[in-house]
Length: 573
Image 1 (tube, rainbow, N blue to C red):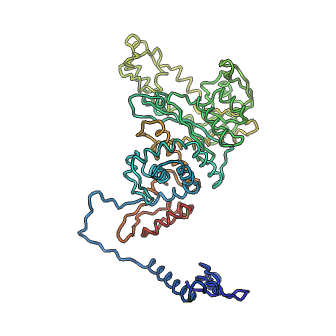
Image 2 (image 1 turned 180 degrees about the vertical axis):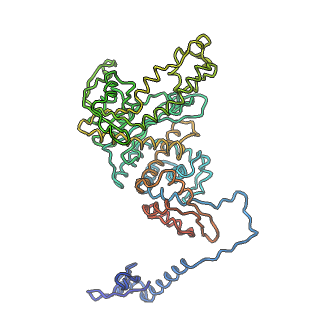
Image 3 (image 1 turned 60 degrees about the vertical axis):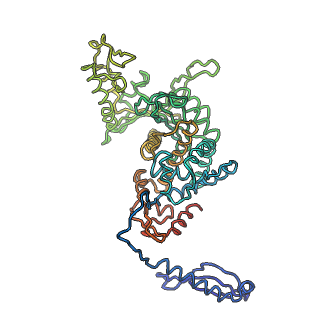
């Protein structure tokens, strides 16, 4: 770098700090302006000798740059020991999430709301810690607080402050989710012409159910009290909105309340709701149509009408039967009778809707159906042979294959008087096997092709994967909280964590899996050596790709604390 003096057209001399770079293509030195200092005649009013002053300043800058690039010497004492409780290890990978957190201006939302509280601690600092460590080191709030020194951000708050913050987060939950939605639209664009919806539940290891945590139909076939969670995501798999329901709420009862929320607050325009057969009811279909929206739902063949079953099994109309994979499909547009609740009487009445029915057969689906059913069939056959082994709590799927089954309500054991009468229902099994490999979809989108409807429906795997991520990588459960507001805040933290992860995956064009990304960011850590220097010991292709999309340099082996803080500060701009 050097001090550049340039005479302008007006005759005045302008001072600036410049630097010369050799251009290999033109084979010439190119001057780059680093900083414009001002006109010499103006600077003379502030400095006795501006040229001498800034020449010395440039010299100091050059010396500083040389020192920064110069190798350092680290003294190693072979006799040195660590004090008990020493932990010099800190994570740096979390800065990728810091970048997205601040791109979505979550910090601004929290700090603006904090102005109206009397809290002496920083809600934003707490939320960042809970989100970053939920992604990288999921644990209880207590364990998270104990690990707060794993990150370089300011964490001068107590465990009690964290618990107090949970009520604050719950209070602003809906506003914060809407804020995130609006900022996703602004920062990255968001396609909500299709929204995917599904329901899952999370169990709680408690003895006594309460108002929220109730006994219900557990997705994991556990006897514990559960809470139901409905979730909407967009076509990129990024969450839009979630809602919690008591554990005894049926999946199909959650859709309308959730739809009302996003239609009223989110202004999505006309949407097509894509969901599994668990939410398909006449009321849900009717309300979707009344709201001016569309739907693509899977449809239970085994639970359908005789006419629909005959349509499925009728080989007429199927195309693609010569496909090397054995895949074939057909479709039709036809009226279907649905049962809708009359809002005045509360009674069900028939209504007719025009639908597009898409049916397809896949040998892979047929094999999967047999595999999925095999355990239940095996259990049923064993129970018929050895009734004393019957366990009501562990009979999931087997019960329907046993005829004349009656159990003791107290013990769950098969009653003695029917043990000789029970038998395996071969007819039931044969009836189910007839439909193995067939899949049905019903849709309001009459003008869409069958191929397009199948493509739309197959996007539902993204929300199913999101649920798996929450239960494995992010570890939503177990929830070490009992107050309802804190439980809801816990799910909000997990929701935000999932949003950040999904945005990062989108930036990476879904090149890497969730687990792979989190594992690499977890390993991107450093240890303090001396003189405020930290040493890094891990770098891979995933971190390289993340660095390219976030502008963060993850491949340095040594960094000063000041440079680490500068890199973190850059993610907050």
